[in-house]
Length: 293
Image (cartoon, rainbow, N blue to C red; front, side):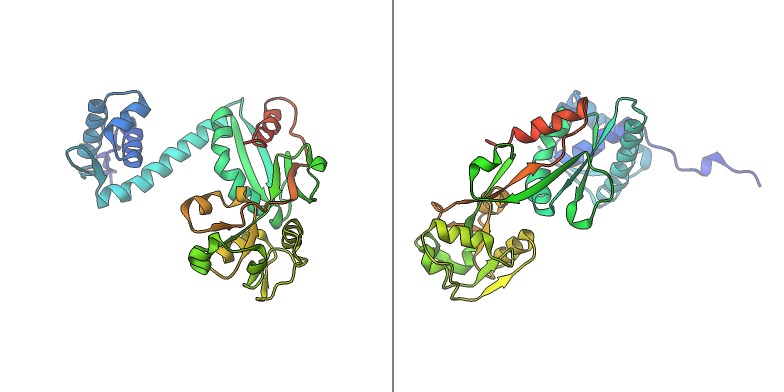
């Protein structure tokens, strides 16, 4: 039996796939054209060519906007996966590519480092990053290890990239309008959330507020600050957190800051290992550049 080439689906013009992917992401032919340095008309023609080839409408077209059809959403998953595979394979062939392994505590990695990594990636397009959580154990020999040290003396942490200042935070559902006027002492009448068994952050905060750490409303202890922050968001109690680690929650209003004038230093995040010489050494400088940001 002879194989028939005519029975095979016709491959779409590969040059049209980036136009489709970017137009889907931006929801705009104009923005896609700007990103690809083409005209909106050229993007429109590429997408029409793609639709004609596969015989499926990918976008609903309005007067000034486009939106994916159901088929378009399905197809986008496959197109993005294919483009990512091609990009990964191309990068792997580059003789100038380097790999940087970063190990860090999970909270600083998730809440501080990852939201800022886009600037490093843009400035260092030839570096492939591997970000690994210290909580899961060492899987590779790291190029950079980010560590946390306790302490209240800023002078001890001259080489730190992030000072850990702690503030009291809670869900607005817990205190409502009373949050703005609550005193440090009054907070201890409410359930207290601890991120360490010895209540280090709370004890430092109370010392700065010249009050005794004597929680009268009970307490819940967690083994990570990540868990404590999550519990705080759900309204379980009053927690302590670094404003740098709950920036989004404070901005969006899922957390509110209490007694904002009390923000003692309780520790710092530092670089425990220097990156190798050459192109990777810039990571240290990039990281330290955030200290005053």
